[in-house]
Amino acid sequence: MTRRAVLLALAPLLAVAGWAAEEQFAFMPDGGRTILARLVAGLEPDTRQAVLTREAEADDWADWARAQDPEISEIAAKTLAGYSALNLPLADAALAKVSPDDLADALPPDGKDLAIAQCQFCHSLFSGYLMHDRDETGWKGTFKAPFHTEIPMTEVERDTFAGYSALNMPLNFEDVPPEWRF
Image: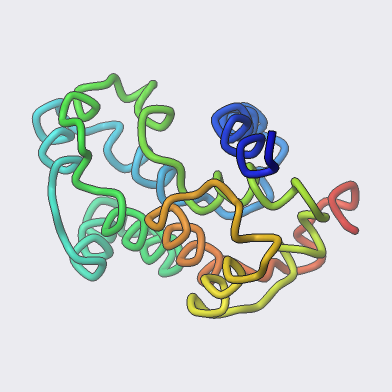
């Protein structure tokens, strides 16, 4: 079995493991999936469905986030906006009817989810990801490296990862728990 086949077979398991381990990664900024689920949780089902099946540009999503939560940070609004512009409208409108408690698990993975699921495979999350300062183009460029070309991610997932990472990385050294350093 090729390395690619192994990675493809393990990808869903790794994603679930990453989501299940979310508490241990609470030091990382929330990704768009988490922010979106939080912002739509209190909406009426029909309104929530309208939001999740809406197609909009990133600037429109950022404005929507600020309207929903006037206290949202600019980085969080942009993180949500980038995620939503790439991953919404939901391909399956039925997912929009999922209960608020289960919604985060039903949404496509965000940049944080993808980093947790993929970046620890071959190197330290700390030195290989959390401390890197790159723009979106720089993060997308990581997928051109021979050892990254086989990472089982769609183009939308790669763009989602790059957008999240450009906005939220690097972390401050002090914000990373000692057990996650190096």
